[in-house]
Amino acid sequence: MSKSRFVQRPAILPAVKRRSIAIVGAGRLGTVLALQLHRPGYQIAEIVARNNRRSLSAARKLARKVGAKVSTRGQPRLDANLVWFCVPDAEIAKAASQLSERDWKGKTVFHSSGVLTSDVLDRLREKGAQVASVHPLMTFVQGAMPDLAGVTFALEGDAPAMQLARRVVRDLKGEVIQLRVRDKVAYHAFATMICPLLVSFLMNAEQIAARAGIPRVQARRRMLPIIQQTLTNYANLGPANAFSGPIVRGDVGTIRQHLEVLSTFPVARNVYVVLAHAALEALPSDRKKEISDLLRKVSLSN
Image 1 (spheres, helix red, strand yellow):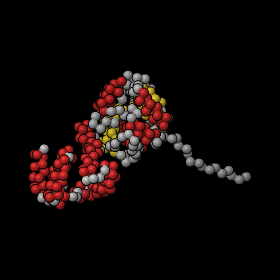
Image 2 (cartoon, rainbow, N blue to C red):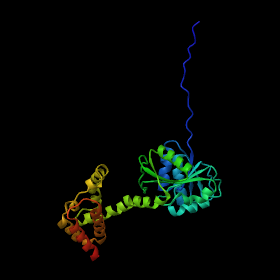
Image 3 (cartoon, rainbow, N blue to C red):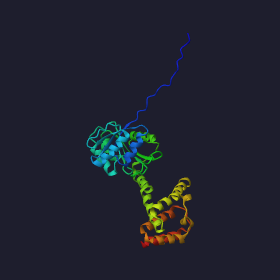
């Protein structure tokens, strides 16, 4: 009789159970987070919305995409392991207070304010939750759906909550930095300078382009190649080696002409002067004193 042959099959390992998540707020941030957390397998259990037509409509639309239930702040389920507040900064403490009568023991709670610390969730911390602020260094605007892969998330809060946050960010293919409580405002000022104030700067550049006869929509298209190359140079070479133009050359005459043509755009001229002063402080340039004196005269004339 031939011996039976037994084929050893690889063991079937159980799937890793990911935490269930309740998203409080179905705005731009909440929508992006819910969709991108759903992709690697997180269970989006609930979308908690304000009790008005617009908020509920957005919550239902998002819930259909991720297979979640919809509730209001007045009647939430909140049976998820992780509750993530994605509401405006001014609403975080209020929303946490509205939901504080639920059972928070054993739960983890995040908020995504860049400037507020985890202490804004103290009411839930006192109820037994582990809390953290988890801020994605990204912009969220209507009509855009940013990918969170490669995005930095700034963390601050209770150690167990931050440990979970690191795992979640890893699953989103993002990166993590840990902040001290006292550093959050400076961090948010940094974030504001590189995003909304950058948009403000570019808007002023559009105005100057219009003065040169370049329509604004066309200016936005035509400025992209030089902006993209400047950012590439900045990333690869550092600020000093990426710096070019009349200041680094010490071209006082050109700078004077710039300031004259910008006299009809006082806000844009002020932006130019402030940035030029900053460049003289930290970046290479010839004829620094002459340029500085010229800029100072313009500042005094305002």
